[in-house]
Image (cartoon, rainbow, N blue to C red; front, side):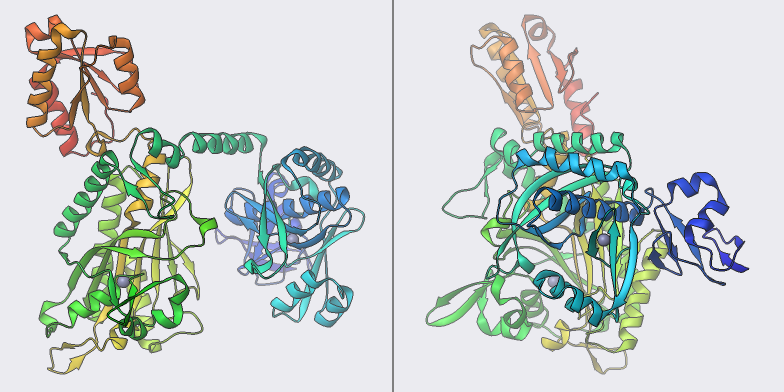
Length: 638
Ligand SMILES: [Zn+2]
Ligand SMILES: [Zn+2]
C-alpha cells in the first residue's frame, strides 16, 4: 500500500503502483469522470501515470486552468491529425495553447482556407467520437533523433528540449506526435471545439525561414461554453475600438504616420479625463510629477543599456552631427533628474511620476488600433527608497492600482509575481529582501497571486497586474518592477543615516501602462458608452421645434457654465431624428425641451439606453449629474 496526500490534506491509502486515474476513482466516480490530468508533487502528469508512497496528488479537471490547457492542447493533436488526414503531405511543426484556444503550425504548400474549416471539424468530430486513448511512449534522445531523422521541424523541437528522455503521444491508428504532454485520457475528452482562423507565420518568427500556416482553434468543456465564447467574440467585433473610434470621431490614424495615433477633440476629452484622474492620484499618493525630453543623446542610451539590448526598437536622429535617440522608456531621463541634486535618506521614499511619451518600433504587421502603437504615453513613475522601505512602497502602489482599476469599472484582477531568473545581477541578499518585500506586500493586502518562478527581469523581481473586461478578456496593465541595475549604471547615490553614500533601490511602476491602449480597452469595455465623467459630451439639449430653440440654448448655456460638457441640437430635424442621432453618439443624457418645459424651467431627461423620459427642474438635473460626475459614478441611470 502507498499513502498519498490530497490537496485538502486528507491522506489516502492506495494500492502499490496505482495510477492517478485509480486515485480519482477511489475518491469518487464523479471526479473520475471529470478527471483530465493529475498533479503529482507539483508536476502535471497523465491519468495513466503512477503514484508512489508520500506523493501529493491532485486530480485536475476542466475547472482548473491546467485541465483546460491539457484539453485544448490535446485538441490541437486531434486537429493536427484531421489536417494530416485531409492533406497527407502536411508536415507538423508545433501546436501550443494560447489564451482561449490553441494553434498548430504546419508546413503545407496548399493554402488552407476558411472554406476548409468545416471539413477539418468533421474529421476532428470523427476522431473525438472514436474516443481513442492518448498513449505516451518514451525513448532516449538519440533514439528519438534517429526516429525523426529527416524531419527538420521535429528534429529541431527535440534539440530545443534539454531532457534525456523524449516522449511521444499517439492516439487511434498510428497518429503520433512528439510531445512533452500531459494529455487528457482520450480523444473523446477534448471538449467542444471549433477551427477559428488561419494565418501565415514564420518558423520561430524568423522571416528568412519558410512561411508556415498557423491554424487556430478553440475548445471548451461544453457546447454551451463554446457558444458563449463565440458570442463574446461577436460582441468584441461589435465593440472594436477602431470602428467605434471612427464612428464616435474619437481618434484616427494616417498613412503619414503608421502606428501614431491622432486624437480628435472628443477623444482628447476622454484622454484628459484619464490623465487628470491619474494626476489626482499621484497627488493623493505622494508623487511629484516631472517631464523629461523625448530626444536624448546617444551616450545616455549606451549608459542605460538600451543601446545594447533594445536598439532594434528605437528611433534615431542626428542633431548638429551628433547622434540622438528618441526615448523608448522614461527611466534614463528620470535618473538624470535625480542626479541634478544630492539626496539624503531623509527625502526617501522619493516618488517621481512622469506621463512620458515614448516611441518603440513595432513591425507594421502587429500594429492594432490603439492597442499596439509605435508612440504612446506611459503613466510612469520611479520610486527611490531604501531596502527596508520596499514593502510599504509596494503596498502603496497596490492601493493606487486597485483604486484606479475600480474607478474605471474593473473589479476582476489577477496578479503575477516573477522571481529571480538564473541570469541576474545583484546579490542574492538584495533579491531575497526585494522578493520577500513584494510577497509580504501582497500577503499584507490578502491578495491571491501566481508566482512565475525565475521569470523576473535580470535586473529585479516584478509584479504584473491583469484586469478582465466585460468580455472576460484579460489585459495586462500595471507593473511594479524593482531595478538593481539602473541606479548602478547611472551611479545614483544618497547619503545614508551613517553618513556613507549608498545606492538607492529604484522601483519602476505603471498603473495603466499606456494611455492609448487603456483608452482602447475602455472604449471596448463600455462599447463606446462611457460613464458620464468620461463622456466627451455629457448632455445634449434637444428642442422639440424652433419655438423652443431659444430656451434650449439658454439651458445649454447654463449647464455649460456650471461645468457640464453640454451640447445642443438646434437643427430643424424632427425630434425623433435628433434623439436617434444623439443616441447613436452615445451621449448619456438627452434633454428634450418643448413649450411645457420652457414654461417650468424644466427639462425632460432621457437617459442613454432608456425609453423613458422624466421631467425635472433644470437645477435638479444639474445637481444630480454633477454628483454623478464628482463620484465618478459608472452608471448613468438616475
Ligand atoms: Zn501534445
Ligand atoms: Zn522606469
